[in-house]
Length: 378
Image 1: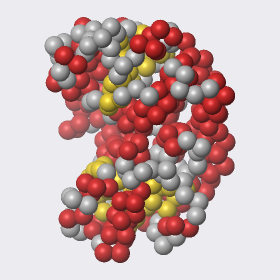
Image 2: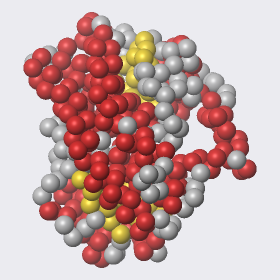
Image 3: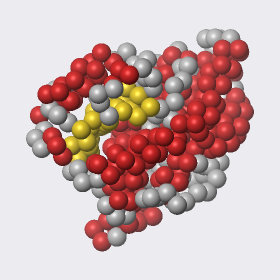
């Protein structure tokens, strides 16, 4: 057995086959979940979800804008349910299209947000594995997920499937709206499926590297995760897994704000800094400046998660992730090193996922803190 094996790692190792299986399940579903007239009527899209689902929305936002050509916002569920201006809902028949993601479907705030937008004239598509849940019964339409049961761990498999469902849906919207040919749509879909084989090839080395880094970083006090645009999804995900699996301080931020704020932090030798660097990201010049400051001036410990095959970052810590033909496709696998790293650190320091929902954390047992909340549809 692999040293320091853990549930998050075992979920990661299952991902190549999960991509293949879920692609076969979701590709036809995303073709049929919305009718052609419904697709043509969309003037604006709002993506919403909590936790990992919020990160998945960030990962897919740019795909909806580039592929479907539709203005798209990522709106936190509590903002959508309590503070989003009602006049921006129902401004045209069945608009905006609100896509709410929750595998369990039982998160109170997600269901509340969907009930509110539907009340005010929006069209809500729920992406969930539980059609009988609050989300499933509140949405105008449901895209059903069918993720096979697996050993519990801070979300890895469910996160990938959430991203895959959103990306396949974005491709379908652009195809129907005539943004590109059927052949181009097929190429987009094939790029997603190709991530399975690429990840399978790269996992052994990636796993080895993250095990070694975890041993070096296991006693650090805090972690910074930096990403821009859709790369910020992996940064947000990394922050979430640090909290869930390790219970240490963490922050996710973009490169510009990091150079306004986070570089002021003291005890730099105690901060692990993870930079997400997709070769196609338009903000990469700023990210490169950050890397130089963080390494040369601050002497921070760095990990660069990148699909750049050239030795651009040879003097820094780096881990390669599968390269894709389209930037958004890489979102399917870009997060994998982060999941491996935090799974290993949690195991090495003897931490229990979610603090075991014991003692001071007992109020969160079985998700009670996010399920058992007052529903107030405004």
